[in-house]
Each structure stands twice: as C-alpha cells, then as structure tokens.
Image (tube, rainbow, N blue to C red; front, side, top):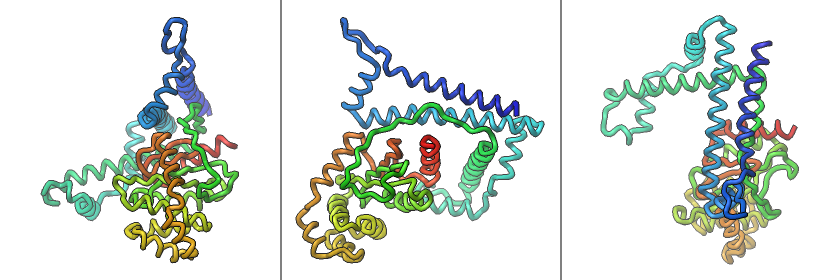
Length: 341
C-alpha cells in the first residue's frame, strides 16, 4: 500500500509540473515601447497565419509529453512489480516479456518477406531471413512489454493526467450528416474523402466505435475531398449530400466505401438506386450540383483548422490524423468519459 501511495504521489507531481508549463501563455513575450505582447498573442497570430504548422507543432509538444509520461509510468510500475517479486527490474522484465512474446515462425518471416518484397532490393528470402527474424522478434518483445505495462497499470493506482490535450473548436452545423445521440458526451468530427483509401480503412473502425460505445459517441461528417489526387472525390461528396437530403447519407456512405472504385457519375447514380434513394430526386440534385457550395464550405472549414490530409478527425476537439486503430479511439474516448464523470 505504501508503494502504491508513493507511485500515485509521484505521478501527481509529474502531471502538475506539465500543467504549470502550459500556463505560460499569459506571460509577456516582448515589449514594444509601452505595448506588451503576450505569448498567447503570438500563438493566436501563428495559428491564424499558418494553422497547419501551428496545429502540428502544438500536437507534437503534447504527444512528446504524453510519450514521456507513459515511459515514466511504465518504468515505475515495472520497478514496483519487480520489487514485489524480490528480483531486479531487468530480470523481471526479461521473464515477463518472454512469457508474453509470440514466437516468430518461418511462416511469419516468409509472409513478411512477401508483403515487403519491393523493399528487399532483389535479395532472396534465404539471405534476408535472419534480419527479418530479428526485426519480428524485436517487434514481438515490444508488443509484449506494452501488454505487461497495460496489465500492471490496470492493477496499480489510477493515473490521472492533469495536463490537457490540445483542443480545436470545430463548428458543427445542423445540416452536417450525423450518427449518434445529440447529447453524446463524445463527438467525433471527421473530415473525409470518399476516394481516399485511408478514409475507407477508417470507416469500419468508426463503426466499431459506434457499436462499442452506443449513445456515448456521435460521429459528424465533413466533406474534405482532396481534389488534386482524387479526381472523383468532389462529385462523390456532392452525391453524399444529395443522399443526406433524403435521409440516407450513412447508407450511401457505407455503399461508396464498399465500392470505392465505382465513383464516376453513372456509378454514383447506380449506388443511389442500390441504397433505395428516389432516383429522379437524387439525379436532379446531383446533376444540378445542388450541394457544391456546401462541399466547398466543408473544405474551407477544414483548411481554416489546418486540415491537409484525410481522414482528419477531431474527438472532442482532439485531433486524430490518419486511419488509426480502434485502440487509439477507445483510449481517448475512455479519457473523455472519465473527464465527464
């Protein structure tokens, strides 16, 4: 019990020091005659002049702090567990990782070789197999260590992070396609593109999130077609809004991501019919580009926030870039729910 209290106290001190560091935004940064320019004023100017660079820089600082905190917590819980066993930290870690690490088989090595054949520079499997084996073994050890730390943290004192993640205010319009309860404590705003393969990969993850958390999470769609690299994305976005007009955006959304190679205008009209939309109404909406301005507004909103890739999501204002695994969402959602409790 004494060790647990000491660990909890140490974690509180770690987090508090980060909180104090973040409170410097009101400090003066410069004086020009009688004019005082604060750090916050510099932040605001930077954010307005280059929102992408500012958002990335702020997020990088936060990610670095969280990674450092996670590393310190891991060292502490492993050290406490080793002490309880009466062995050295190294001996404990080696034994526990060995229990959890999945053995690497010849089939694993061959599968990795085939999946990465273009990076093998013409070397045969027999030649490169020892290198691949070492890499996969190291990967399994890293996964095993993460599992160990996760198990130890579950049985140890709670870690209460006292410095907040960067948050971006994202406006949600009543006209935006939404799935989930209006009063959900967690809102995920997704800037996405129907032709983007990473957006396609993210779609089932978000569906998993909705199934796992139910009314605790709502998802809001924002169009952000990357027109320079995805020539069909703009019209697909307009088609999505035409489907939304008939109350079937999410059915159309799922159908497009399930048939991502069929995004030409005739394909979109067929998809509309496939999901049960009124074909004449949809075609009139689509052919007239009725929602072109709405799609452009979504793109402009994303640019103002610094969005430059898809999918980019904001979970209660916290940015998630790319097709992240379910565990990333679950961890952040659990944090947000604990804050709301």
